[in-house]
Length: 340
Image (cartoon, rainbow, N blue to C red; front, side, top):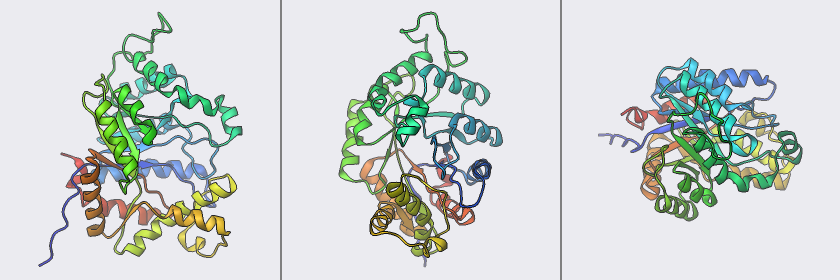
């Protein structure tokens, strides 16, 4: 008798970066994201998030709140949000207004995911009007953003963020191990990468929980662990899904540009320098991939190590059909992927 695969013990959600594909227009990637969100909703996932990237040929998602509006309009039940809006690139008032509009249009379905990254290159940062040092103000920006949802920011008397003022929607902070305390001080949920549950990541989660201060956003700490998960009939097929993004990351680290994705078959024919090969192999490590049974066991172990409340799956790939099949297989492991 075959032993049934145990369900994953926490809800699963999805982050889609709107990857472009070699030879295809960026607009196609954005339309693919909206269609993908509809498919993810039908599979029963808890949330669908979009990201913010500027000046990146391989990513079409440059305006996450705009794309989130399109996704929310095309879906019915799934929560929609950002993973995330990068606060150093924007004034907190404008961010509050944008999410106020989203929450007003789609009440009870909007997540406000926030990060502290700035542009990837000096040129992009100059075009955005920010510098690397702006990341140091992230905590203060979060505090101001929270004020716009209450009675207005103290630094700007008699100014109000309409229609955000008075609304309540969950805030999530995208952080590495160094940013856990910022999320805790803000009273936001923590989104942290590291599916293998390394000691540094687990220690950051512990610090976040210990330092968490209740807020209008969250009354208790909430931890989302994020990363790539690929599922297929065999472990080799699942690993192939990870190849396109690993290759693009290797190119970005050696040539300064994250390119449109290519197929795994094409990548196998491309020459790589020793340095590119090193980054490429590193890009294939640290993820969860395999058959349904293998992935279920790894995800259960991850939740056991970290106490995560949710797992955010960020897998992107060139082959859209194989990617959707991976998410469908994964959904079967989650008891309707957290609908309860």
